[in-house]
Amino acid sequence: MQILKNFGLFFIFSLLVSSLQAQVEDESLTESSEVEDTSGMLDDIVEREVLKEQRILAYEPIREADIVWEKRIWRVLDVREKMNIEFMYPERPFFKILIDAAKAGDMKIFATDEFKKRVTGSDLEAMLSKTDTITTYDPDTYEESVKIIHNDIDYTDIKKFRIKELWYFDKEASRVYCRILGISPIKEEKDASTGEVKYELPMFWIYYPDARQVFARERVFNEKNDISPSSWADIFDTRFFSSYILKQSNVQDVRLQDVYTPEKYGDNAGIQLLLESEKIKNELFNFEHDLWVY
Image 1 (cartoon, rainbow, N blue to C red):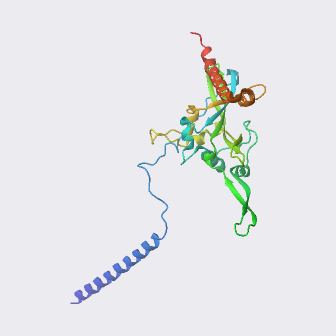
Image 2 (image 1 turned 180 degrees about the horizontal axis):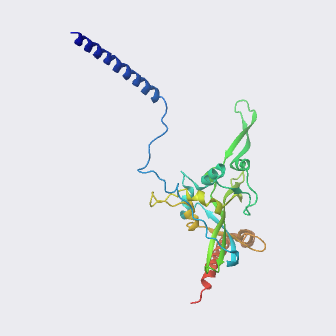
Image 3 (image 1 turned 60 degrees about the vertical axis):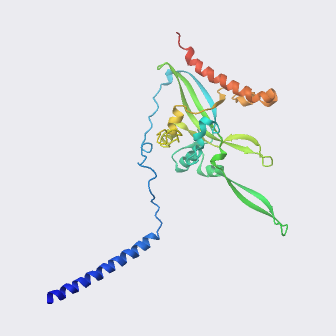
């Protein structure tokens, strides 16, 4: 009889303990549910680590004595061209990659294409955000007031990039090479009253050989294959983009658009500029071709 009594007390005690544990679990579940879960789930079937761990191959060293010919070329890359559409990929546009890397200190930026004067963080912030004032009127009191607004630059405002490259002939390898030296986003300055573009200016320059490792870890969207591991370093190193020549090294240091002006050529100035750009491109191609005798 005593055994049955002890068993009954043990059974009741077990029920009380189980009830208390369930209540504690319910309370902890309620408390944890109030905290937002920011971990999220993987929007894929595997973790994408190929580009994150990729290491760029260094340029092959070259001796100064082996360079017997060189030419500096400045190009304009228009992101509105079909071949350059990946530069405007909304989730990760190329301009945002430059800004994020510059702010994080992973990429050095310079004021000119000579890569001497560094651009500071405060100077970069001033480029990206412009403070302006506008005059407003109260319709009820007709009082005039001045309002301060901040105009932050957006990646859609950058429609062109300028590329500086060096073409040279290596007598040791007996071939012509091309290396990109710098890349610059071009900002349009518009007339406040008409909205027309007055002129274009480079915002800053990045030294491409120093930025190749950053570009090697940034994926380029491929419309034909979502898993394509192509990076921005691949795009530039293989020259998989469309552009036209703006300037080649010359005595007067003038651009083609300074030579083929509307004042001299009228409405045909743009056509003449593109024809001269194509002529320079063919000269670069034919230079190496003409070195060989068949």
